Length: 95
Image (spheres, rainbow, N blue to C red):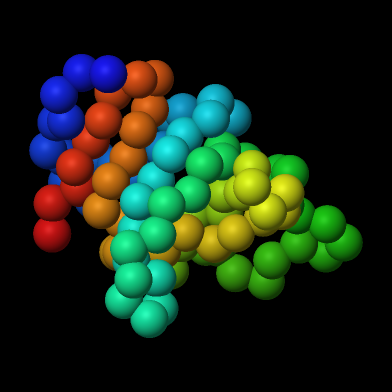
């Protein structure tokens, strides 16, 4: 893996959206303030069933990610994103 590159939150969101359904690792702070890691892939269509969401998660700073460990959809708050690994490149997300 190459040395981490520092990017903005907006760039991190753009990279996640452009990634398609390739696997990604993200590090973020959860609600309690603990550092957490998740492996999965951003795939909004895999998580929508029935009538779908009644709001656009992107407008609220959220991204739907299919969690590989829990085998289900999760909402990733882009505002708490700290670390990102895409295509063997690590990114540190600046505040």
